[in-house]
Image: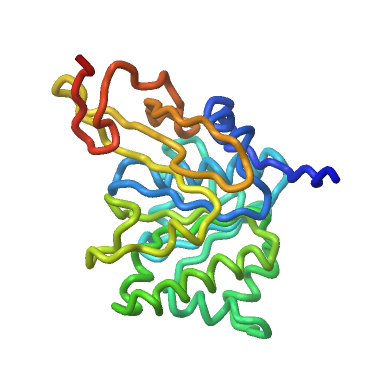
Length: 248
């Protein structure tokens, strides 16, 4: 018996889609992990803009950056979020993790739930997941919170990107084993890398359920229009630690 083929959602960047076996699987949840400023929000916006091009509505949920700042920063990359929101192609919500969780409960009819229903997004970006760790210091409770969010997005048919500032994606800020990487379908790592006394950026697919994906670690730069993926790092080790060394 042949299993049905799932649709792929593009990032609007051929090289990045190829790293993911053709793009993210529709209805999946993806964790994007990296240090502040490395390009996580840009990647999230790029994902939403690719959706606009594909006539798929998108939703950006921010827990830390006001919409005015997001709109300003996006304009520098060539994306007019304000106009796209007016046209109903994307929605922007600025809220807190606890308020969002309440709004995602079945039967909840608050303003955030109504906004989500109005936008009816195919794609959603959460920025940043680090704020959920402030809700509890209990690892089991945090896992349940993450599980609630992942299941809610899937139940509503959304393909999600969850941005996280963890330097080590398998640890919480308290050093405990984190649950989110195990709950999501895909994990993307974005890293600053020191190469010959200069700083570069690296991207890798750590895991991807239900799909083959490239294992190599590749360079990327941020330009107008989002992330531009470059060549793989070759002849070096220690890429994901941040400090590389040549293989002798």
